[in-house]
Structure formats: structure tokens, C-alpha cells
Image (cartoon, rainbow, N blue to C red):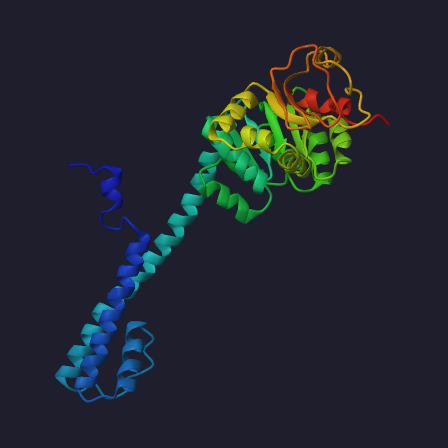
Length: 354
């Protein structure tokens, strides 16, 4: 009869850690019993302990007291047989535990590398910080293939424990990007908190794969232009986005609560994001180009990059689905729907003219 892998793993020598614990427990029982036996034969606890330790560990410096009675000889023989046998078992279990852990790590890395080599049209996430973790969770939830590239050993190991394909390596190294399959990848997202590193990774990735869709993170607004010049298709400024969200909550409280507050709207935003669309609230600043223009004129100037779906007046009036002849006034909050990158590139329409 053959055993299944699950049954075999629970059989004899199935768990190295359990074997080690069992062996240590057996040795402790033998030593305590032998010490009690020597003490009952008239030895002190200290002498009995010293004798048992020497016998079990097969050191053999000499007998503490003469072993000249049948009782003492029987205790000593039993201590030698059970103690030495237990030590051999513990040593074997310890070697087995170390070997199994090393083999598991080696074969685990080989399996992971084999999976990475089979990836195609996947996403490479450079950095597993706060943004990297959230990005990996969202991609996994959507069933999209991806691999994480992380330099820190502990963080890379944590990513593997979370079930993600993760390579330990420096994303600024072209060899690491090749190992992550950059020539077969569809997207690269570099989300490190270091602008210089993100620029360098973007340059390297663009030279290695001209068709790659690159999304780069920037900490400073001045870095956005550098990342775009380096070859990034999209630039994300987390601080800038967070500030915009706070401004929405302050200036257009009801609209912000409607757009960001409900689960349905968050799901709707996820659908829009999958279609490369975004919904934003843009304030019409004084002396900006849109002041006094009609909805139709602004959308025509944007060349279809976005559509204005709602206007929040400063007096509290809300115009949903405004007609083409409605004019924009100073301080209006314009809820626009459009393609994220193009919408952000046309944000100058809503800011004061220089």
C-alpha cells in the first residue's frame, strides 16, 4: 500500500521539527530519571547531574564515584543506552531540519524563477513599500500577473510569504530587470520613495523595452517632467493627489462625499480606472481660461480629453448634466470625466493664466 504525500509527511520522520522536539523531550526524561536513580542510590544531586551529563554526551572524563554495585552499574548501562541513542536521534533530527529548510528554500526559489520565466504581458513592481503593497494586492485581486522586484532581503521574504512572486534585486540594475522579464512585460511600475532611483529605473526600462508602458512615482512636482523625459508614460504624485483630495473635501464637501464616500462609487471608480478613465473635481480659479466660457467651448478646446458632468456653484447650487450653453463662473467646482493623463495635462485650463 502506498502513502499519499500528506500521509507520508505525518509518518515517521515526516516533520524534522517534531522529531527534534520529541528527541529533546526524550533526552530530558532520560536524564531526569537517571539523576533521580543515582540520587536514590546515595549520590548527591550535583554528582548525579555531572555523571549523567558526561554519560549522555559521551565525554567520559571518569566516574564521579565508584560504580561497584549491580544497582549503579544497571543505572549507568541504562543511561548509556537510552542517553546515547537519544543524542544520536536528536543530532539526526537537527541535521534533517537544517537540510530540509535549505532544500525547501532552494527548490522554492527555483519554482518561483520558473514561474517568472513563464510570465508574459505581466507587470513589474519596483519596490514593495506602502504603494507597492497596495498595488500588488489590487493586481492579485484582479488576477493580473505581476512580479515584485525588491532590494531588501527581509521585505522580499515578506512578499514571498504573502504569496507574491518576488525577486530580490536592485531595480536600478539592468540584470535584475532582465531576470524579471522586462522584455516580455507589459507594464513597469516604479514606486520607490526615491525620485533619482525612479528616474534611473525609467531610463533603463525604456532602453530595454521601447514598447513598455511605464508608470513612475514622483515625490516632488519638479520630478514629473524629468520622469516624462526619461520615458515614463504616466507619472503619479502621491502627495499631490492626497492634497487634491483634501482640497475637494474642504471646498466641495457634498460632492467629495458623494464621489469618494460610498462603496458603490469606489467600485465605479475601479471600473473607470480599468477603462483608463478618471473622475476628478477641478476648481475654476480666478483669471483662468475657462471663466466665462460655455461647457461646449471648454470641451471643444480639450478636444475630447474630458467631459464636464457636474458644476458646483459657490452659492451651493449643483448643476448635474449641465447643458452646452452653461457658462463657468469663478470658484465653480467642475466634476470632469476623462482620461487621467490627458486630463492632468490640460489642468492648466483651470488655473490662472501666467
